[in-house]
Image (tube, rainbow over all chains, first blue to last red):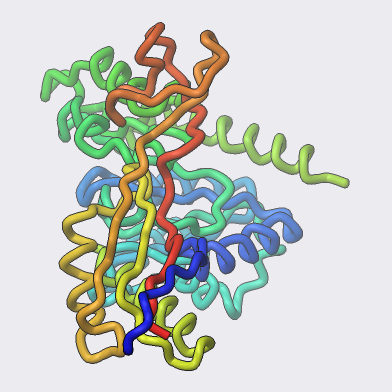
Length: 227
Length: 115
C-alpha cells in the first residue's frame, strides 16, 4: 500500500545563504563606516577605465580600495593598482558573477574600517549579477555610448537591480551618434526615477560630478546610520 | 548562466528537508519565480535535471509558478500588474513607478514527498 504524496510547505528563499552573508557584510560596512559601491555592466563597457580614474582621483583625497572580479587573469587588478589604491583581484574561475561569500573571503585580511570607499567591480555580465546581493551601499550599472541605446530594454533586470546608471565613453558619443534622450528614456522605462550620470574616463569629463555624487551619498548614509 | 548553481542550491535545500524527515523521498519541488529574480525558467528547468542526477532527488520534478511583476501606482494608489518589465508603469494611468511589490521571488514554497 502506498500512501498519497504529502505536500510540505517550506517557503525558503533559494539565495538565502548569499543574502545572509550579504546582510552580514552590509552590517560590517555600516559599522566600519565605509561606503561600498559596486559596478556591473557588460564586458567592454569601460568599468575598469572608469574605476581606475575614480580611484586615482579619490586616492589623492581619501582612503579607497577596490575588489575586482574576473573569470581569469589579474590584468584588471594590475591596471587598477596604477591608481596606488589597494586592489585585490577575485578570480571566479568559471563563475559568471560575484557572490557575497567571495567578497567576504577577499576581505578576510582587510580592515575595512580604515577605508572611506570600497569599490567592487563585478564580472562583465548583464545577466547573472542581478540575482546576487553583495552587501554594497550603492550599485552602479554602466552603459557605454557604443553599446546601443536599447541596452536597458534588453537587460531590464540588471537595470532594475541597480541604483544609478552611469553612461560611459561620452567622448565617443558624437562619433557613434549616441542618442542620449532615447537612452535616458529607456533607462527610465525599466527603472523609473533612476539617477543617470555621464562620464568620460578618457577626458575626465563628468568624473568630478560622479565623485561629488558618491560623496553626498556617503554623507547621507552616515547621517542615517548614525545612532 | 548561473541557473546551474541556483538549481544546485534548490537540490541541496530539498535534500536537507528530506534528511530531517527520515530521508523521505521527494517527488517534486514547488518554486515561485519572478521575472526580476534574474533567473530564466527554461534554463533553470534543464539545470535542475542536471543538478538532481545522482542525488536522492533524481527523477523529481521542479514545478515553477511564475509570479507576475506587481507595482504600487502612486496615482491610482493601488497595486497593479505591469504589462512588461520593459515598462515599469501603471497600465491604467501610465504613471511610472519604481515601487516593486512582487516579482523578485526565487523561493521554494513546498515539497511533495512520499512518507
